[in-house]
Image 1 (cartoon, rainbow, N blue to C red):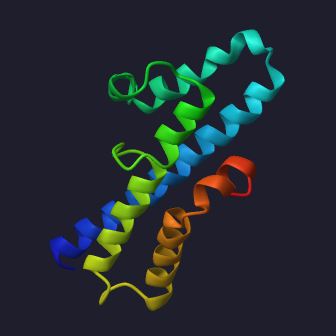
Image 2: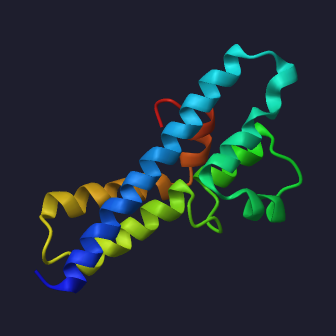
Length: 132
């Protein structure tokens, strides 16, 4: 296996895994916040700290509200660790080795990318976060 192919496969998997982890962080935190009193709504800030993007987040947003944090971690194209950016990077890695990977794998990665970049995806994710 060529090192270029091995590198692309590694990063393809790494980006998909990172997108899944961020989605899980957001989902778990959202359910946790439902059970806490409103006075503890500052717990969204800890989610940014856990992802390691605290400084970058503060450059872009004034406060860690639910809306700001979810946007930053899911659909912010400028955040290299957002779900959108991870899926985009995974797709680019898959595209670079498309002749090596199975057609089914390419189709799934591409379908995932198209789902995340769909104009209605953000509205769907906001109204049905667990299903998204």
